[in-house]
Image (cartoon, rainbow, N blue to C red; front, top):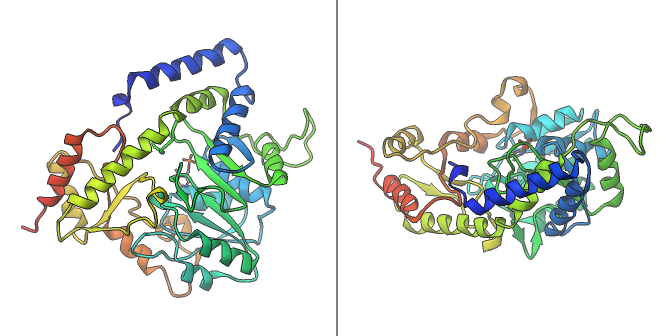
Length: 364
Ligand SMILES: *Cc1c(COP(=O)(O)O)cnc(C)c1O
């Protein structure tokens, strides 16, 4: 599903040069590299502030805590997401409420979210799943009308945009992950919270660093979740390739949409506009998923499932609050979704081999 070793040699050179720069500087935590990468990434997101943190999950937790969302507060999100989204809500001390998804995109359903809103609802965490940014006006309108905060989980949506606005600029706060497999990933963990709100940015900056305001003064209890200088320097080096890599993901997706023609396989909806999908994952659905996956494996094509177990079926989440009408679409999607390889290092031959293997699948 990923092939880091096949990356261009120049990327490796740029990462080594970045690492050397940090080692030569003798400054390893919260320094110039993090500051400049924060500014760079915030600018790409169209917001004023970036706060580099340890990982994407912490970015969500710190976002919630910066907004004073915690004990007794309800936060609505999707059960079709990485476990980290929901774990971050629990770690902030808030109460996750799971709404259902739309089957044609696997994104959070606005109708279901409406059914989940109570007087205790403080926020919606909208996950731009698989790299899709969709229906943002409707989400902004709903959150404004109900006076709840919109938080974007952008861990899969680097450089995605809608109507000329970047993912991360729609909500009061947004969270990015730079885990190795993300569209922008480093050789380790990393994350960033982005926001246009100066107060939230400043508070997040303290919360990631023990709640420290100035050295040795701790007006509140924070965490230790800092992006380190080496990761920031390497991410900044890798950033140069991101637009090109994103374009390559779109080309692969376009080839899949055009040439996969197996009646047993369905595509998710096309994005609203080309920029609104960065194909972190290219996901298809197939009611014979287990057999399709085995067939692909036999043809040398690895395909993975995102995600096979919805959050509400995870052991610690069995009693989690949810849409009173249930989470049927999430359950259905979890049983039929399959992610085809879609990464920038794939050659034309690789892409053709995937298409051929998918089209050759038949029920015996
Ligand atoms: C990867 C991911 C996260 C968590 O990011 P980490 O850096 O691994 O903590 C959160 N949400 C989504 C949707 C993700 O894909």
